[in-house]
Image (tube, rainbow, N blue to C red):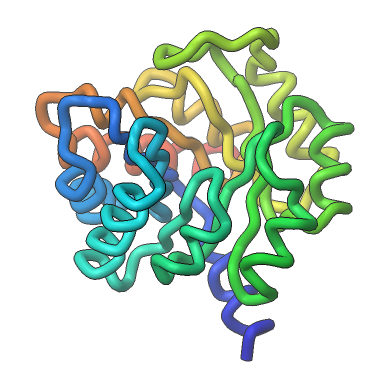
Length: 219
């Protein structure tokens, strides 16, 4: 059963990948609802300012509000399990993919951050299912001490790890998301392009539509 659940979850990673934060003007629950209603293939919860109890309460509220959504918790495998999420994403200083897998079990997804093809292959070997690859472009939300990959660099990583799904991250908006889709990335993630929008539902719809158009043009 867990193999089937895992495969079904992994197969859903294609399209615009929404990220919900607890740092912006938009309430997290409303933000998550806008992402799902607008056509995001997944909703990642990135709660950097909340305490673990607050983050878990928010995650559970969002899970209850969006029972059909592919819900990914950032950083914390334990909170992913407790919230009934579909997976966890671990960064370079979080638990390793192997340790995250021990916590979440075989049915949930484990995503891992990778900055280049070598790191991406190492993460997959350690138990990751999919990869958050970037920065593709300079970030608009946080300072990064690594150079941007650009579209050519992203495309090279996608080829190096195929068929594992790649989620492109950093600096992605409506102007460049179609080009990102053309690199072979399964998903493109954005936070500021929705969270900072006056109409997050419309912003999500535009991003999802542009990504799909980019995929079709590249196929």
